[in-house]
Length: 317
Image (cartoon, rainbow, N blue to C red; front, side, top):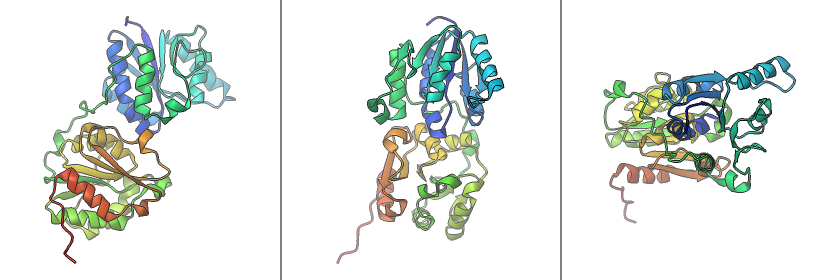
């Protein structure tokens, strides 16, 4: 494809953004001589910038429809960019309407009505994993070779000193999603079990996860508490050295899976790992109606397979 100006639109949630990185890389490869701009939200500016897939990253103010000054600024940005093609990877009602901001419609990949390379916004697409839906969308626009981004561009050399073997533990979640958390007492028991097998549990998360990780580290002295000491970039780097990872439906697990680390994700019934689960060839998920229904025994059993540990036989009756 020829050299020109390309606009990519992608907001959040975090997991969806990470899962779109493979599509973003494919766009970069398809438009090697182009200037590519990403329109996104503030939380993803650093991640997008470090990926190397964009010449510039612009924050979308996402104005209300009555906020005329910001709408005018966004419209001016669209037209001054002289974009010949737009890849709408967000595919929301809002971003579909952005096409109307252009004085002259560029080529458009997305669900917007009137798009030159339109993908139907039907039930079939909505049942697909978001990664597969983006791959199908880009194929219509002539962009092929979309593969999972393994985050190899994120450095990892500062984590060579963590005691090995180790397993990453993401026992927390955002405060708004407490029902996505597997019971802390079971994480305690799981970490104690790992410690008994000579495996270091490494606790990861932000200050929002501190209370959970403090309880685990108090009950499991062999655990290494890295709460608040790592960024999401760091977690991807750590994952390359980890024996495995276990965690809830949360951002760190989304970063760990694509690296190839053997990952066990724990999901409640209202989540949808088939559509939003972490990418990666070595990802396994357990889902139950409520997190309390996921037993310690089944998590251990999965980890025994993942870690290739000898299963513990039940005592004879």
